[in-house]
Image (cartoon, rainbow, N blue to C red; front, top):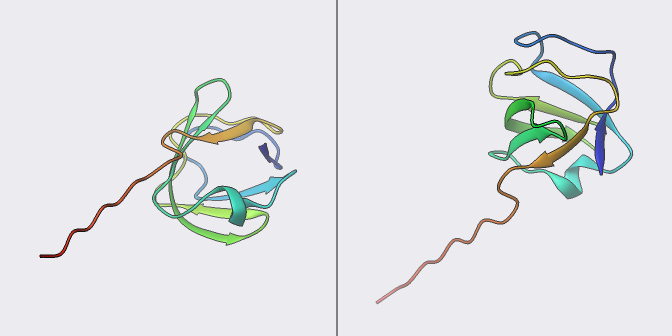
Length: 84
């Protein structure tokens, strides 16, 4: 799992989040909506900057604590395209 690697922060305070325990580039992608294990909403990812950093489209929606485990609300996206 990916965890927050920062001191606790209040809602609406950060757009750049530092992570640890797993490579964020393998777990998240732009457009993913991220929640913490206690169902606190982080927000929508604008970019995955590195293995340990993501940037949100807006400041975090809910308060987040250090070591909160993060997950993607909609982890699988299927895009179909048909040509005639």
